[in-house]
Image (cartoon, rainbow, N blue to C red; front, side, top):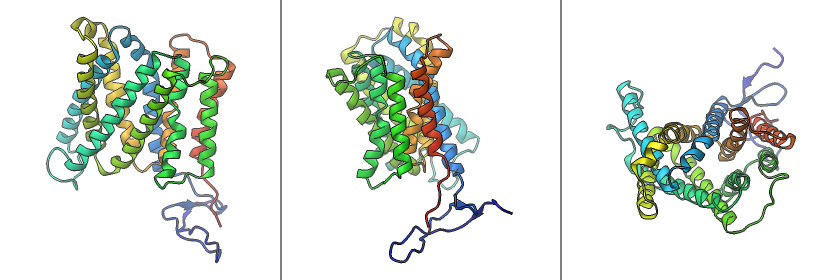
Length: 336
């Protein structure tokens, strides 16, 4: 039947003989296009759900910051995330949802888990701290733009680590950055590098490191366990900083209880676990494109829930960013 898809082992083109070399596992149709990778699509949708939760959590974070310092709020949500994830792991284990091929015991691949959790946790804590410090010295719009610059830094880091994103992905990255600029800065602010902007640039670099570390460790580990250890590290570090630089009090926790609950369970416990699971076997460039939609969902949530306005320019920015992630999922023409 014309147009029917069939599995075909292809080879990448050899310049010397024009013959192909195998690209295993790709589905090609008779017109020479390979089909959309279902696992890639599933993982990308997980990361878009993650970005949606982060974007809608912006309101809760803003409310929480009115009642307590950044380290106290980060410590509170992170300890709650740890409790949520520990309970989830216990329930899944009781239901027999663990990997039967994994080593015995509650914690799997302990040596790699400790190393991965510490590296990912330190990077996440440092990125969150740099973001909070930078936000206090510049506009929210500029902070949103500069934090999401990891969408450019991730593929650049990938090049240095031996990964070479194709031309299509670079075009998607460029479109996403333009869309991000239209959404966050166009007509509102100028881009300059003062003290706060340097901190936000450091934040983007640190988030890039966290994404690349998750990309490295997640295929080797249970996603929920890695998320738990990562947040345990964040909890310990942020608690130390909270008692050194701030003065937490019971009144602060009571006032910000709803914000802590939403950010701890949904943004930290659920969304960051979705990030770890979603990044398994997914190109980190595509992962960064999906996660930077956080800015879009944040703007749309403000528009729909809080009654904020979105200009035509900002809507064009949203459309460009959504378009970039859609194009990144489209089938490509086979070579040769």
